Image (cartoon, rainbow, N blue to C red; front, side):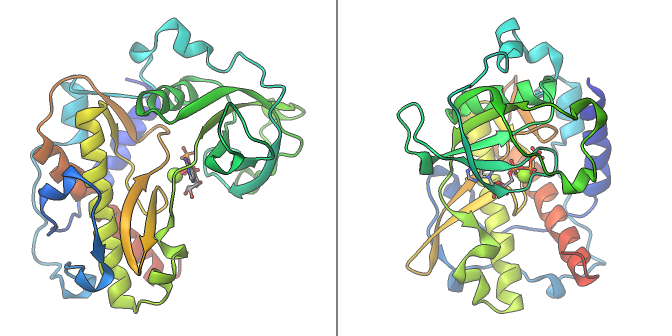
Length: 297
Ligand SMILES: Nc1ncnc2c1ncn2[C@@H]1O[C@H](COP(=O)(O)OP(=O)(O)OP(=O)(O)O)[C@@H](O)[C@H]1O
Ligand SMILES: [Mg+2]
């Protein structure tokens, strides 16, 4: 197992100590969910007693990794030779437009200034990565399996701004071509950017956040069963919601980066995987609420 995978497991162990109950039926896994904010039925944070232990779940990532049920997407054993060549091609004809998001482990999510490979430019995004290594190969592989990959290769980047790194790491200084993934742009917005969320009061906001996290797990589990790619980094920054007529009509996942994405190698029980996802994702959400209470963004 790679070092990053081990770090992921350590973080997982730290973060999974708090999980909350969920109320939406698993039947929702079958299709797009349609629920208005008014019908969201979850327990708000301040109604939960900290004395009540969170439910134990039967699956945990560590166990699934150790018995070979899942493999980290950057595990060297998942790559064929071709998988390691996905950034060799130079994409000379690709021109980056606006940066739409600053990545935490990447050099941003960008638009294109032109249509590409039959896709309208508004249906694509480009993720610029620092280095072409297992982590990046893995993301390409997961996106390909999910049917979301359009192209990968090296792209010319005129200006790299990396506020979270302070300075560009030495080995990346002076480079003008970086590994990049061109992928389908998912519909929807981050929940916090929707009018529905902005108009809601604090309690409703908490409830709808929990609901969205629950849906993102259902989506992740459904994909794990059908595509054998398990998205285990379910948080509100990796979930886009489509709102129509004042209600959330669909939830889509983004970010198949590592750690947090796994290949499913053996059969997994849908319900148990859902419990695992839910426990972890709700735990993370609760942690982010606590951080927000202490002034973190
Ligand atoms: N396929 C996509 N379609 C639409 N928006 C996307 C897509 N991928 C990413 N985004 C937007 O860009 C933001 C950052 O992307 P992403 O989550 O992949 O980066 P990150 O969290 O920094 O990733 P990583 O941890 O893999 O470096 C997302 O929160 C989302 O708003
Ligand atoms: Mg992300």
